[in-house]
Image 1 (spheres, helix red, strand yellow):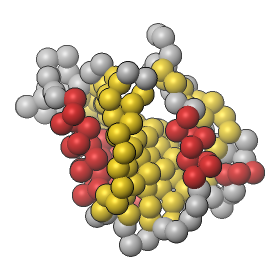
Image 2: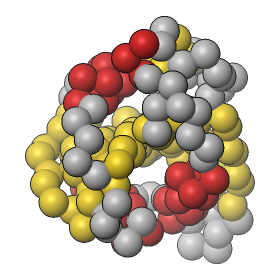
Image 3: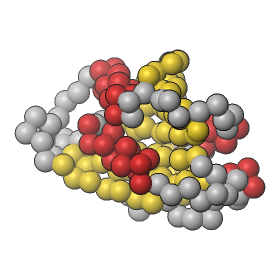
Length: 175
């Protein structure tokens, strides 16, 4: 999941603020071409995609998927990793490593964390702060696939209604 964190960091740093208010934008359901999930993003634009396949001697090749939208200075992201079928991982360790690597990658500090589950699937929800931003994130694992949802705002901004809307829109589709 190291590459997922790097892809997320690139998306955060390369994003252009659209200057639109998420509360005034129509939310649109998005199903990526991979088809196994859907999520609603704010705004008129299609999510930007970044898909990276990484060779790795320890895990075998894995593919990282990231879809993101920027609206009103807020970045909304959903990401997941497809590991090689031969790679085995401990679910709780994977969740913790994703949290820690994200915080380290943005040079932030985890300021709160609560257990989270997507149905029967384990995860965590946490808030990370930097000097200028706050990120609320969810990490959970379904089968062999870790997922991460992230919303990044400027520090001190209350965007909880839009964050809740984004998080609650996530669905897995039967494929």
